[in-house]
Image (cartoon, rainbow, N blue to C red; front, side):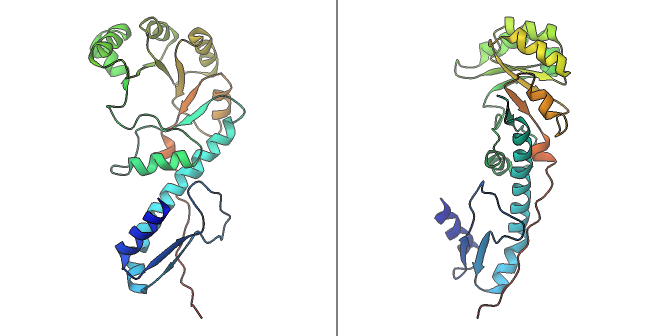
Length: 232
């Protein structure tokens, strides 16, 4: 795959441009490190510089932030997940960056799995009716997740045989109670207001997953630059 990437980048700029990677996806690099070398016509290289740096900076920032969250929960069973809050047209790349940072991917689109949110529950009339409606419309291989705000809603979702429950904006105490109530009957996912200061406490409640939209919509860019060097 790396050879294909190098060939594609070279051809996109100029057929005589060469591209050599010194570090691969998911590797740690120190400040000042050279991550790749490009040789070729200066005009061709500079014409693609900004686009390439924009991609690399954004995706490296996502991977770095994901790793920071991962480090906070590695002593627990909780896994860090992204969301669908991605840049239009770049979802595949941004979710790959999350994987490189040690996270996991949530669904890629509306067809991967069913996520029943508060508006769906209002339209259906109740949690159980919403789950039943989804179960009747999808195949047995499709998982159904329900977003719940209260422990009463949680019990209703479990009684309706939801596969995953999204515990939205709950306190840590409520999360602990929710994990006890679930007792392995469904996957427990926490979400809402998660940051680097709160993530450890959330993970220690015993939830299985913690989904964080900020991984992709608010990760700071990692600073990268293209510097020319004279070849002697």
